[in-house]
Length: 128
Image 1 (cartoon, rainbow, N blue to C red):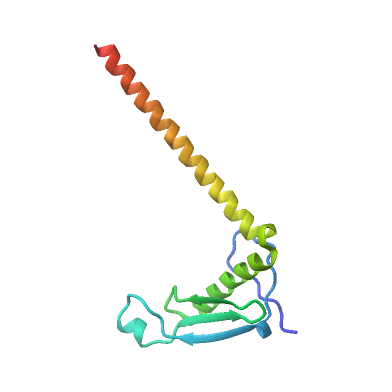
Image 2 (image 1 turned 30 degrees about the vertical axis):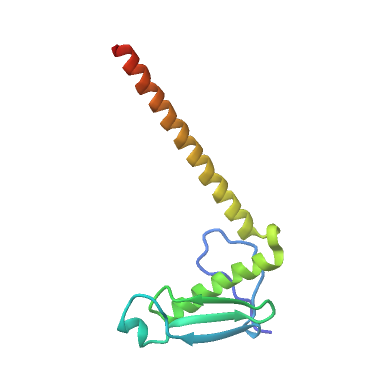
């Protein structure tokens, strides 16, 4: 067996399902989007497919093929984990927690705005 690939560069290590190289099909294609000749003439875009689940990831975030390979594996590992574990996945739980935090921040900002508005109205009434 080929050793499991770990999600490298993660500050908070998730309990992700492992991937083996035997389960992956990797291709290098030309990227698309802005960048002109640098993008159109080099095959540094990585397309990674997880054969058992059929999940495909395309990564063209950097000019480096090695960095794109690494990033594609990280993304694929998270997607495969989410595919198999669903709501029990650490990726799903982390995303839910960040959404909840964002909503709480929005709610507090709205409350502060209302407080300021009310304060200004009170000042206007005091001036009259």
